[in-house]
Image 1: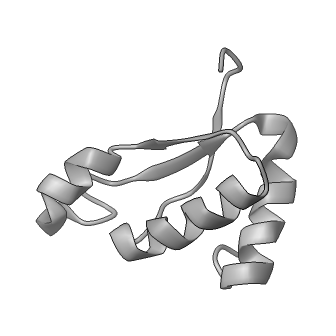
Image 2: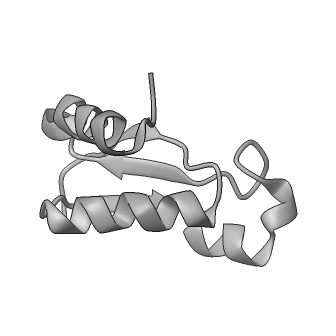
Length: 77
């Protein structure tokens, strides 16, 4: 994936991340989760610390994916 990505959500924990990934993979969405592995090793930092995970997607699909996560999991605003 050579397209620049944009952040659309910060998963609160690894359990939430599993649900997000299941939906994105079902829908065939290309995504990147930053700090995913660091968060599993250093969970005490949580979503706002050093290990804060970020869900990154293609800018052209950001609104669509945000809506999908909101409808299916109640995530985001």
